[in-house]
Image (tube, rainbow, N blue to C red):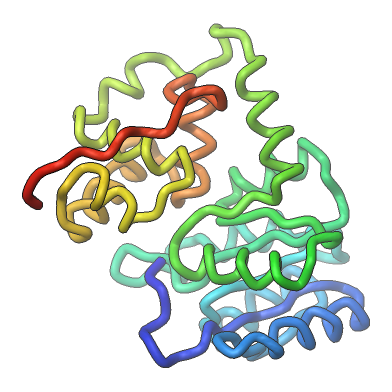
Length: 243
């Protein structure tokens, strides 16, 4: 998903079955100069309907809700009707009180771009919304630590087959490795000395070849496959003219 144009505010839809929680979130989001709450919903079904009409940049989504829950709603929000010119209309940021492995896995596999605990600060909420609005992944630090530890501990037999890696070109693999270290598109530009348009093309091809929804899933895949490990040092930047 592309970042909203300069001068425009990030449009946010809040989804939670508790009105008090939505009101509190709305106060924090509206206090940010580059964000605005455009709507609220109390369950997953209502979230999809409101997203369909409002086309927000980011949907901040609770998990445990009546009728359709947050994971079910996320699956629907990354369906074809919410994709325009190959990009998702709305990015989903899961916001929940549950630091539960199964919830994290389900949300990421459903297509969520980020996962944040409700205990996070208002500053971190703002950073997470900006990140997913810009097309990047966001994982709350405690969640990320658990997720990476679990990926690293998996037996080799449970990791993706080498044939999946063989689908990627050397340059696409490089881009995936750098992205998995938490670097932005601009960082990749500076590391590989290529244009941002070329970076976006490589990222798009990685997602297509691996059957992934977005950057968050690509990062998770890189660790799960063993392509990147938490102890690996960050990539070294190259020097030379852009190409």
